[in-house]
Image (cartoon, rainbow, N blue to C red; front, side, top):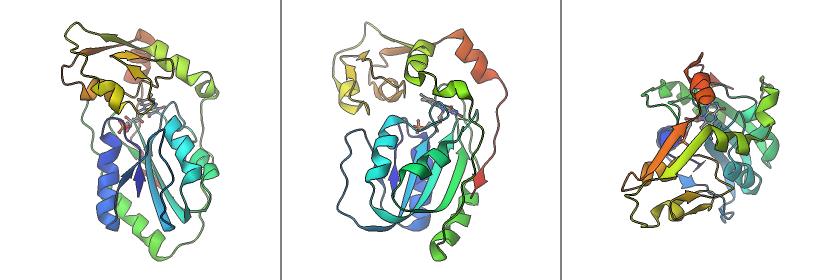
Length: 225
Ligand SMILES: Cc1cc2nc3c(=O)[nH]c(=O)nc-3n(C[C@H](O)[C@H](O)[C@H](O)COP(=O)(O)O)c2cc1C
């Protein structure tokens, strides 16, 4: 079982599923190296970023060795784009199950808990594995338009004076782009550094258009394929 989770929200879902399947949870990162396991079934849990997949997930998916895959995408109740289909096209194996799971949004101070027990239905897929069809779902065409740059413009990060240069942000950055409290050009604004900073020395300001977008219509669909 594999998971990418910058702030731990997706990890909660992954932990629920790992317990359900009684399997070990391995975390993916940008420099993740293929392990030596020949998995029968790999379950991969990852968040939707900009209606697509986070770069570390895009890079890791083709490297996971398994005959069958169950793909679970968490999303912040805005839009999941076509993320599962994009993930299914990257894996080298059959996709036998999938799910979109709504969860609290990284950029909003909110508590939202979906009914994870609905994921129990995925146990069936392992007991009786057969390839499934993941349908194309609507993705805003603008979502693929410089997502990295748009994210950086939408989320401003500043290092406050109380930074004591401990280096934890750089050490834990999943993109290896943080340097002494300053995000580098490959920063995906995943917010891990902000969350783990022991000094709370990283300040985040959302651009008004992003705030407006996030406060707009939300959805809570938990879909299982
Ligand atoms: C850079 C970034 C982009 C995101 N894009 C979307 C999105 O397009 N649609 C959505 O519903 N949620 C989006 N989210 C919210 C996350 O999908 C959601 O909060 C996720 O569960 C975060 O998991 P994690 O912090 O454990 O990685 C985004 C979050 C980040 C940080």
